[in-house]
Length: 129
Image (tube, rainbow, N blue to C red; front, side):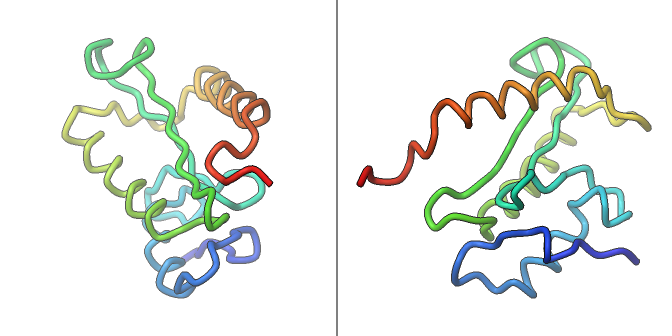
């Protein structure tokens, strides 16, 4: 059984890293347990895309891209992991289409948009010094 490498994850200060690593196991694609989430570059969040049959089930076309990350305290938090698991459950309820191979093109484009927004916005949630 593969396990996520805690070396690549930057946890929020004060979290129980052992418990959070265990909770991440079923979510991460790299763990080999059917999860579809990935740790973002820098190790401070989780991201994945969801594909649905109809436009009405999502916001843009038929794919929704979600990235969870905690800004303060910085790093991956228990809330990020809990919300990722909640998204998986809701996606099942709304009829997510699970394909053997993810549509790399749409996902790549959505990830690039998210990366640009993060780069341009900076840290919007922390008080300015």
